[in-house]
Length: 607
Image: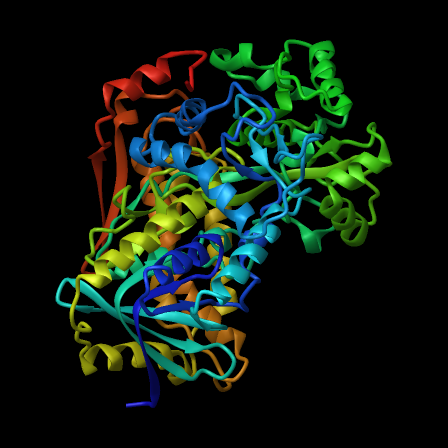
């Protein structure tokens, strides 16, 4: 058997973004040994790309805000498919977690009287997003990284985990390799927290960084956990569309939160046409009302008497609107629409949106203080993921926990902007706490068999032994063709079935993927491993989408355009059965009567 080093920890956290760092900090605070594995370098997690802000009902800008309204907004945005308990805990604990970040050194933008400043975002009733210009995620990672390093956490950088190991039905460790030179490493652990992020790299046009290859979802699936609601893939409405080399890079919702206007090639502010009838009253009825809201924002009065501009509709609705405008021939020069904030003072734009200013200036040679941006939908977020218990974040596999985007349930059918960053710190903390409690109740390190280790090594070395194996880059391109054309923004049964048939054939070729060269700095080898994880995610998305015969949130079926209330009471669940993926519908947890009452009210008290 090949050589490998061995490390032991009470809790092993896989993934070093916001959720993973927060979980590791919480577990280390319980006085136990914690290891933190990151696929990239510490501090380069995809969380740094979250720009607009972290949603929490501090009420510093509008005192009417409270956890009840945040809970209500989250449930409405998720089309009532959320795990109610996760949405409740999130709404109740987000403010505490933001103040915790502040205590640890996070520097948020401030109101005139020194409180944390909050901005508007799509789907939120009040101005709720605490922010640092448009670099909020970067500030969060800086703060958590500094806190984590001083918490005694052992960090393993540029390390990929390829397999979870089990002792009977419970987790016992993880096997992986260092990306630099292919050295193998075995982690023994009493509990494991997965915090690996989403599935964005299953799609060609995505705002996600290279690490987002469904690692956590696939590791949990192989270990026996359920994946839920994988059909709900959020296409962020505004990604860059030009030049081609930067296509898909995120254009933060903060641009619209600060008053950015969406127009088509004819100069029409088209979003009024796409407001759902049920929510039309929440948004400005005409351009004068929308301008009043913007003037209020510009003046710094920060009132909330005006209804929101239509550009601040939920992400699923704005993405479908842009897609439709382009498809019907009203798009911009390069196949998007225009997003314009250049009518505002240049100094304000640079102050509020510094990253966006430099991003467009450096990458597209566009000065957003002088002209519009071209934007279009980009695959951005996965609402589904590993099924977890709300209070502890443990999956159905004993000792295996998950937090952040790789877990499912919190966001339902569609995530509100800003809820991702608060999700990371609320449930990262709970996962770390749950894993520490679980590990503390185990006296001896679980057993790991030599057979499992050999299987993990053989799987990693197999691509080198296939001299005529399939090219991983060609397989990746073929996967993009399937997901883009069959599992995208709008779906129909014929395309979904066709895509699943093509995925079945592609999966057989992935089993025979090959790569040349050695293990040192070999991206083809890394991709050969990633392809299997991505294929699991893609198949789960396709099967789940085919099974949900309605349109709800981020899942849009052209052949079933209406929402079916009967399907709003159940999750789509997939799991591994031998070499096959099985699917079933499972009921949502029953919501208590007092929370149901909150959802019925237009205005809720937070006294």
